Length: 600
Image (cartoon, rainbow, N blue to C red; front, side, top):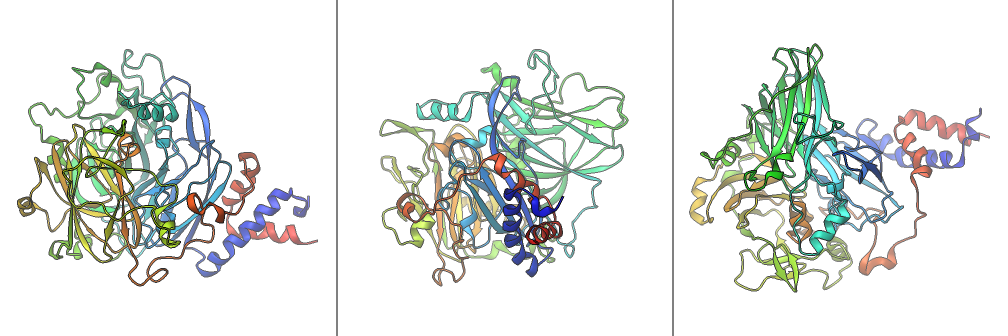
């Protein structure tokens, strides 16, 4: 059959891809990767209860985005949900390009049936990250997947090449739809105790017939005896910190969100919501049975709330020569009753490997952040949810953020007034809490200190888009200037998400070298949804399109700028399936398709 007789949709997709690919490939044939992601609902039963989940290309987790330092990443996303969608690339720093950040402060949502192409560079980054939907608790229904940024060949990795590479997503899970969870929060209620913990989108292995009454589909990691594997762990959950452990195996920590760490063995490690780690795990046990992989809830009281016992994810580590199934009790979690600072002290031991390179050949420790003068300090306080105008809300420094109808970055570009205010206080104010769109007015090239003070009763994690920060200190009590004497000013871990324990503080230092408007938020989905976020405006001192990248040609418009939006013919999964196939072909194959299609 002549290829010119292919269906018109295939030919159109091929021609479009030819135009899309020709310029990048002609400039840098091996420095771009292309992905096509279809986001749509499925009915699955990960905990034995049928429910609507959000899948990416039909799976949960979705496909791996695999790239290399400084490569361009092009991702075409089709929104086949019945509500708007944005995907955010957690930990990816989008150098000078907040247009691709995928949050409401910088991007208009992708309408249902529309597709939109993200394009960004993995600039000066390595490590383990993930993507997820950023709107309206959608992440609680799935829609996530992993991002791996590999070292360039010129930059050595500070450990031997592992024999394999696995990604493990852990996270608390509710059997209610995300829309029902939103309704609970809108009605002023808590989400309550999760129904379980998923590992890679699957329920727990039946380690206990009471807590897991029926057999469920569970995750199995297949390994060979004597070999070492890199295991990347992400807590993608809603709000629960989890303790991760593998029965009878040591976890050699080597990386945390893009920074190589001082290598040390853990028998277990707390992974808080939104955090990512890489471990090397050697298969040095005998294979008399399989082994448990466990992720269980932390800082919960099973004595007062027995339902927390079910909030445990269990997968199986299976040696190729295993002689039997795993059985018996799970490996014990940490016991904090007599060692209340266990988790915090564990976190303080995670430090940067200053003798190793990361994205560049020079050692990570060559940036002497401890000797840089701080230009501004922000003390950001969180408290338990409270009522503002008869609505239950969460706040930072007394302000509960209202999601904008017009993205802040677009408002700046078009010089719109009144969309937001640059009046976020640098300290908590003794005033009535309020609703607002208040942003931090930061200075480009500034070096700021942010102290998160958690006056809530639950652990929080905070994430800053566009940046990694140095976690220089944490302790219980109220922060004061005297605490600076205890800061780690040499090898503090540089990462994108940090935990703040209840009744405690965490201090980070940030070099503001990335222009744009960037989201600073609680990664706890309930608190984020209720307003616990703020945007950091780092203005381009040279004016628009000097340091910052230009607005993309395919920018979406909404809110006050809706009239500028051009119409798009809605797509469906069936009409887009040809495009997904083509996106998985290499450039040469696509070129052949186009040439044969246009030859008479």
